[in-house]
Image (cartoon, rainbow, N blue to C red; front, side, top):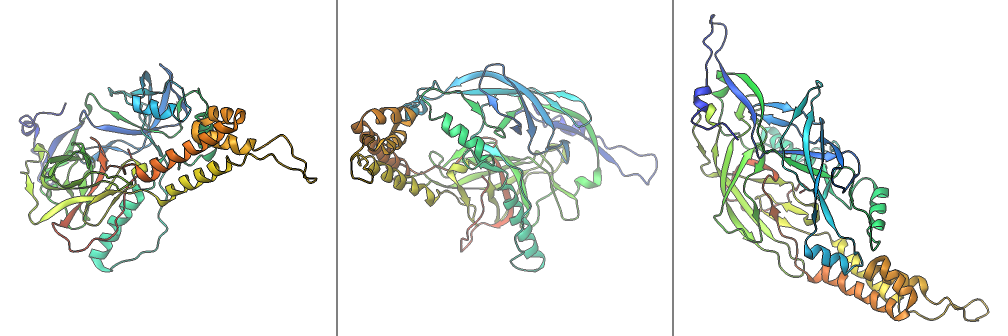
Amino acid sequence: MSVPKLILPILLVVACVASGENAPVVQVPLVVNSGAPLRVYITRRLHMRDGEPVRAKLIEPIYAFDRIVVPAGVELQGHVTKLDPASKMVRYQAIVQGDFTPLHWARVQFTDVLMPDGRTVPIKALDSTGLPTLYVAPRPSKGKIRGNSGILGTARRQASDQVKAKTQDVVDLVRGPNKKEWLEDFLVKKLPYHPQWYRRNTRFDAILSSPLEFGNAEVAFDMLRNVGLPTLESLAQVRLLTAVSSANSKPDMKVEGVLSQPVFSTDKKLLLPEGTLLTGRVRRAQPARWFHRGGQLRFTFDHVEPPAITSVPALELQRMEAQLAGVESDPRAQVKVDSEGDAKATESKTRLLGPLLALAVATRSLDNDVDRNRLGVPTASGNGGGRATAGISGFGLLGAAAARASRTAGTVLGFYGLAWSVYSTIISRGKEVEFEKNTAMEIRFGAPAASPAKTPGHHLARR
């Protein structure tokens, strides 16, 4: 729990110094509030078994007010607490593809943080299932510097580079770095009954159920005098407190977020500390439609409330808005954010290769003539390979066995796989833009409330 706002001013203790050379300071409590997520990734494959131990590393540092209290890269320890059965829809989709495994998801609870100085800090966190994404260490950008020169152009390039840098640290389970491990996982899942595990580098959010306290820090009183709105094109790291979705959010719905990192000016002065509350509203929400037309969502923030200990009143953004610049989302939805902060779910055109491949497999299963040798004498093998491939397309390895035993079964399963591929990649609804609570995003301050043109923006991959 966070310290009540009525008590915080009492904690504002200005040290009266003995000599005039020392500046007064404020005693600021360094607290990571409950509800804050520790974003981690597991360092090795985790089998989904009750009580299985797990080790993970922290992806990004944890801030309190104006400083880091838990650095990135520290290790966390935990264990599997229980197994949640998969939903009926997931089970049905698995069964129609030949997977009869009683699918489940392992819930993991992290209990200890191993600090760099050797201390073990116990934590109380909610257990959670793994996210459908892998963590990959970001690589430095090698692109050439483009755009306008001058102070404004430099600020825009720096803001764009910050957004791009974070697009590289999260990928989906298919585009992960270890292709051999992915291939093994893919083949095992084609078995009618198979073991289950989380892949190495799978991401988790360990949500604190109790606050973490790191004592008090002395902050110069003059430093708090600079608290206020950032300058044009400034970016802020925000943790969403309100779940929003293109499927069910309505215009004017209230949206709240909180700064997960402090914002400093170019001369290193604190502008907004961690814990600053942002309030806004949904501007537009359009659900996904048939034929893979993705959902669209737009929301902005127009009210900024610094922590009570700063004694700074709430700030209103007049004629300006803090709008979305980048967001962490499920990479499979491929959420893109344009220059006005509109988020849209898109899908790669390469998905259309699936039906083409399924069509080739299905037509190949029709060729049931026996093979002929050089003398033209028929053999007895027939089209066993083509039928087996069609069986895999329609019903996994179990379908392959059925197709090998029956020519009719091979043909039926091949066209069944084609029909499912066409429906799932062409006819069905597109992806929704869904941002759950605690979604990490980047907000750009100083963006105009209305812009005459749109240009392609950048997106962060996620959760």
